[in-house]
Length: 87
Image (tube, rainbow, N blue to C red; front, side, top):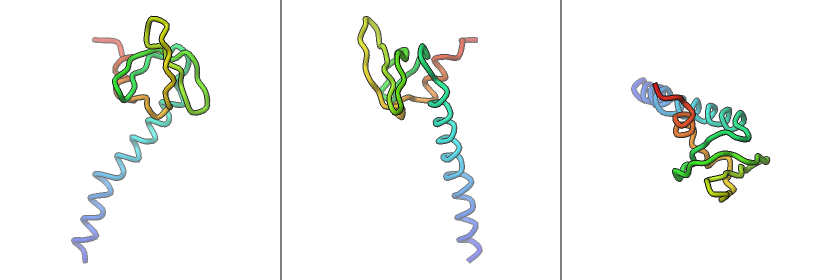
């Protein structure tokens, strides 16, 4: 019985807990970004936020083309990398 309990504990600390932390971080990031923030979507589309609503962003992707995206479509890692100045 002890090996099964250890497997569950290891699974929790190496799989479930980091995923929950990542979800909280993504939610916080989505709540903080606003108009004129540069973002990258999960599909790889780069743009600047023009309008924010409850569940969507209106993103200007260039040449006056604006696309509406769901807030969950914003990539946390790619957007942070885009907004971090190069060393």
